[in-house]
Image 1: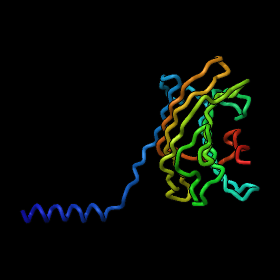
Image 2 (image 1 turned 120 degrees about the vertical axis):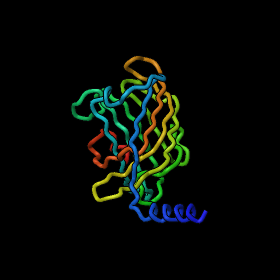
Image 3 (image 1 turned 180 degrees about the horizontal axis):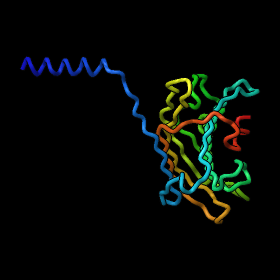
Image 4 (image 1 turned 90 degrees about the vertical axis):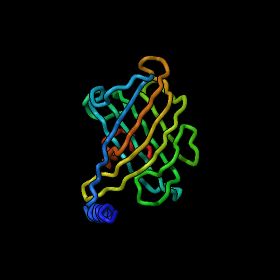
Length: 188
């Protein structure tokens, strides 16, 4: 019994003295109308942007955008793409690129969410985005990471009908280049 207790104590002591290794696995799952697919096979451009700006009203605004474009050309609103964007118009000044919480098209607590394939007469039927963990950078060159889930329905003007969307992002990098998507204007 003493040997077992000594082994357990030694294992615990040695285990705690080792440098922790962060094994965060990146995950991006997406389904449209219940059909899952690899976003990197369907879309040539897969970009994110996260940023913040102090508004004229003195409130801090934070934004996160997931931008998926069919062709590999310049990112523009007039190119066929899918976008999911989150805007917190009364955000916490806590150093995080986005605040945790529930974002919807109904804008509860100043947390707005949009999902769309833009075109003539596009609109959101409903959506709910739950932002979980925001992981701060672990080094000078590491990006912040985001974990979230998306459920929603929107009108697709290219096929003239509504579509459902489900997205899961885990440990997904948040880009900080405002030009990587055409939605940076939403911060203003």
